[in-house]
Image (cartoon, rainbow, N blue to C red; front, side, top):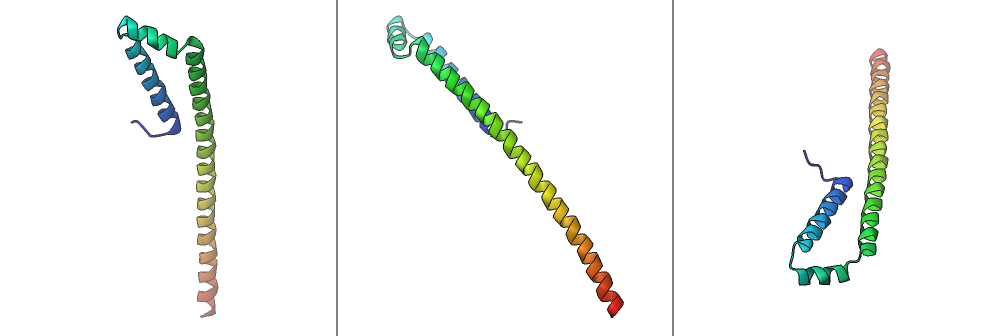
Length: 98
């Protein structure tokens, strides 16, 4: 299933740029000449490197957030177990005293 993660957003953006590039390459020769003037190979390389860097950064951020979520879930389950233990001890203490 397709999830809306930063990695998938960047991948979709890369695909979109590729489709636009291919569409532009298939237009008439005049438009191709204009396109080549507008988007030189250096600009395309810079764009690809920028998108690759964004994808790498997004992957690192995704891993960092997943680790943070795991840590928070662990802390929550630990707190729930401590609450159960303390509640059981309080119940024992109050039931013995009654």
